[in-house]
Image (cartoon, rainbow, N blue to C red; front, side, top):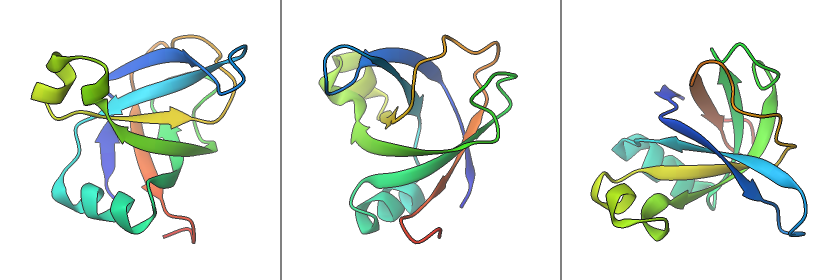
Length: 105
């Protein structure tokens, strides 16, 4: 799978409403959109280039369209990936993300 530049990082509350988890934004292409559809919007994400604790790890994530956040994100056709891990703060660099499916493909 191709690498995608991370355009932004945010902290969001996890489903328990207490813990924070990271959320990244990307600008997808058509192959990514087909890929996430085939994987039921559930992915494994490998982050690199941030010079942070997130680099080199495979992290589960849930993909959704960022339009629910504001008109700006909908207009720019950005997608967000909520990473199912602890929030360790904003990384020094935005970095990039590589995505894998449920079966590692």
